[in-house]
Amino acid sequence: MSNSNLNPRCVRVGSKDIWIVDDHQYVLLIWGTLFQNRKQRRVLVSIDYHPDTNPPFWLWAYQKAMAIDPDREADLVEKFQKRMLASLDPLDLNSVRMSMGQMRNDEHINTAMELGYLSDYHMINCMEKHVYLRGSHYLVPENQFGSLEDAMFQSIELPLEKISTEDLILDIDLDYFLRPENFELDLDQNSIFADLVKQAQIITVARSKTYFDFLRADEFTIQKCEEKLIGLLEKIIYKLDDQKMTS
Image 1 (cartoon, rainbow, N blue to C red):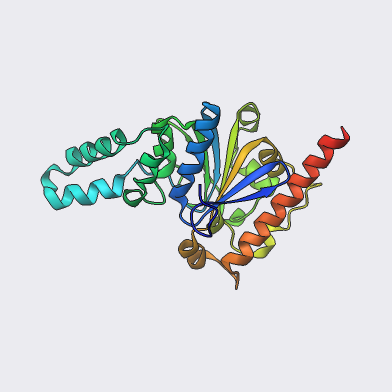
Image 2 (image 1 turned 180 degrees about the vertical axis):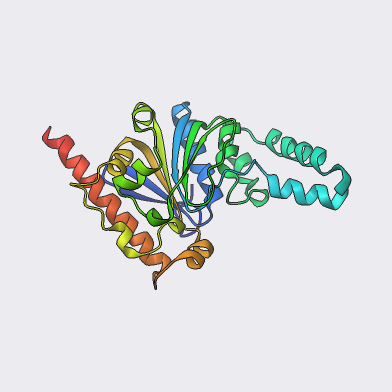
């Protein structure tokens, strides 16, 4: 996997790997690598402005179907989606990498479910509380947008007791954060986000610059947002590592 400034690159913080991508669908390569190495499906906790749980290759399949025969759109969409999924080998990351051109940045989670990289997901977002056959969605109240405080997690009724027993991937999209103050987290008063960081096998971060620039409430750059998030993760991870050494 490349460590370039594009997709993806890794920041090692203490005992944790933080993988950063420009476009959210590229986290699929990271989750696939973890699956290859451990042969174990993980549970995803994703924090994002958008729900990012559209079906695999839906837009590509829809556009292709409409170009061929709009009257058969539903059947053709399903056919093209199945054809793309059939071309992917969960243990061959090159086959997954080759599909990135047909995948949008809101289709990777259910693709990961189809490939067996994930066994379940918890999608925390600011737009939709979807109800699907698999996975769970949690709608953040408007007055909590961008928050990582315990009050936000409690307001959405995230099932913490259930999640605490799972092997997690923690996934964060920078477009969730609206202002620098979102990262001023008092860790003595707020422990839920720190617990998710502690439990995560890896952390993936999507920069999503176009969406970030559209949603930000202040003069807040994508570079500053990334620095703030990494700084908060460093604070949490180094504290956790210190606790391990002294216990």
